[in-house]
Image (cartoon, rainbow, N blue to C red; front, side):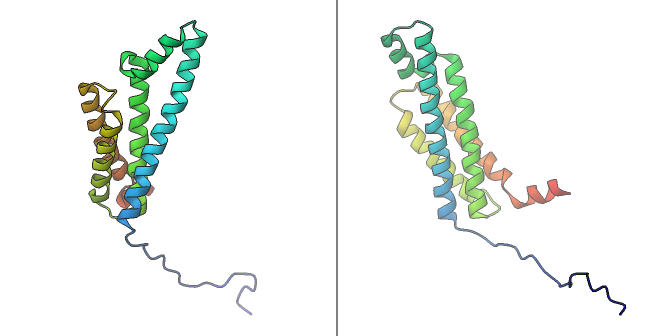
Length: 159
């Protein structure tokens, strides 16, 4: 009767690592997160910006001109860049969390695809310096998101 009858039984439980995931699924999921979140913000911000310009008394032609050339307004351009960077960081993070590689391989593939798709989507309406900046920021932010998802970073921050 030396045992405590109300103590739960003990067992040796070992938490094994999850291993590597699918790089293809990681890249696709990261690309979808990056593009969809960026486009969703772009649509919402454009609607809000159009309403704000309309409330300020601008004509329909002025509003259409402002929304077709977002490079002309520094505030709108900086906002789109900042949110685009955050969406790319999130896409890189999702990619690495699904791929679970612990290196930049999946993130580099995602960065290249995001840059090419961003170039294809925005090439007609964006100036060359702005496109260059967007590509540079896209690649850097996707790789940053990939780095933030590495398992070693989570282990070091838990200590």
